[in-house]
Amino acid sequence: MAISFSLESKAALVTGANTGIGQAIAVALAEAGADVALAGRSEPTETLALIAATERKAVNIKADLSSIEPVGRVIDEAVAGLGKVDILVNNAGIIRRDDLLQFSEEDWDAVMDTNLKTLFFLSQAAAKGMVERGAGKIVNIASLLTFQGGIRVPSYAAAKSGVGGVTKAMANELAAKGVQVNAIAPGYISTNNTAALQGDETRNRQILERIPTGRWGDPKDIAGAAVFLASPASDYVSGHILAVDGGWLAR
Ligand code: NAP
Image 1 (cartoon, rainbow, N blue to C red):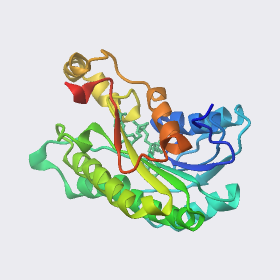
Image 2 (cartoon, rainbow, N blue to C red):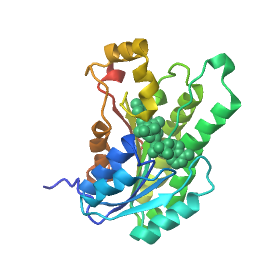
Image 3 (spheres, rainbow, N blue to C red):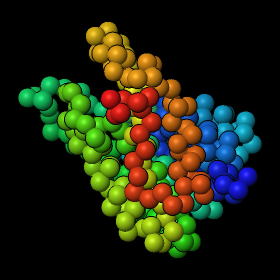
Image 4 (tube, protein in one colour):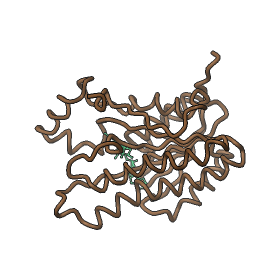
């Protein structure tokens, strides 16, 4: 095939890959040929087993990404385990829901720190090696709330809008150095992050009525976009936010 979606000989680092979207992406990158380092605070037992089944190498890096304190160590351990980081997927993220008028500083800072500050500084740390090699891919997990405000999630909307901004900012400085930075904006995907919404009968019905595809997404629905943005097939895609949302934004 002339166009390559292969990740053979590539090394990827995925944050928050013990479950949900991060797990689906980590496994898909391995299936496409990459060795994968997983960085997160929970044991990624299931993900390690799924990667082992692809016969690619997997490295587990224990790190709480709620602050930037472990950022340098995460990159060092990924390089020690896999030799380099060609692909970084910034997936780890949290959400805090509360009414606007009582939204707390703690819920503001926690979401901004994990979802935006760590994403930027981990990207900065990974980009140094990528720039040295003249090649690399950074894929940020954004959200529909990169484009919309949502309901009862102001710090999440702010952080994910910020992810859109830093994706473009990083892309602008790194594209000429051979590093593509892009983002994926998942729609409503069935994971721990959205369990509360799915459990709320009214919100669940309202959400389903608005999705043209008529169903919640599965984490695996995000994996193809991640492989594309990590592969040579996307070498001329830079600063793009790719919605994978069952058509939500088109309505
Ligand atoms: P999830 O199942 O809750 O996964 C979130 C991942 O982030 C978990 O691995 C979690 O680890 C990790 N994480 C959270 N805080 C962390 C910290 N301080 N240090 C290290 N790891 C941490 O939810 P998901 O839906 O797959 O979310 C993945 C990404 O997609 C997030 O950025 C989310 O905002 C985004 N997203 C999701 C949807 C959706 O509909 N589900 C839509 C748009 C965007 P633990 O298991 O230890 O908490």
